[in-house]
Every structure is written in C-alpha cells, then in structure tokens.
Length: 95
Image 1 (cartoon, rainbow, N blue to C red):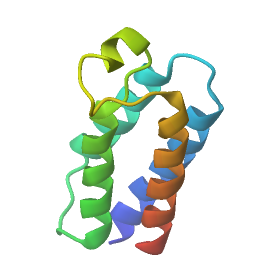
Image 2: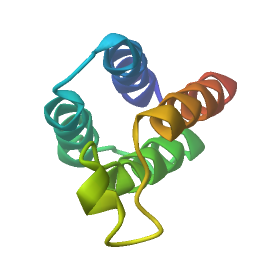
Image 3: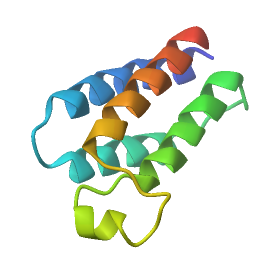
Image 4: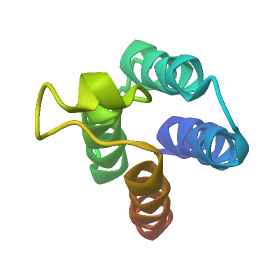
C-alpha cells in the first residue's frame, strides 16, 4: 500500500497542475495515465483500483470541441475540472 500511496500523491500533484493549465492538458493527462498504467502494484488494493479508473476516465477528455462532437462520452475543460475534483477526493478517501 505504501507504493500505491506514493503514486497517489504524485497523481494528486499532477491533477492540481492540470487544473491550472490553460493549454496542453492532453499531454499532461497522458503523463498521468502513463504514470498509473506503468506502475506495477504488488497488490490489488482499493487505491490502485481508483487510480486505474481515473486513468480510464481521462481517456474521454478532448480539448478540441470538434472532437467532442464525435462522441457524447467526450468532455471538455469545464467537466475536466469537475472530474479532477471528484477523483482527487476519491483518491484522498482511499489513501
């Protein structure tokens, strides 16, 4: 669990940074996803489950409004901020 807590702290910092970015969010999101997916958790704990669900959910962020029109599951900046707040709270609850 200590290793998953460590990555969770890093992800929380990354999420805060994404929330402050004016542009380039997709690259920052890809960095968070890579951090989560590349982490080799020794045990399947609840925290890692939350982090993996976060990584999956971030796949639906699209900065470009034209891309968001292609699929109703895609979301933009406004919802991203809401998602970040909700996921950050979920991560903290499970740390």
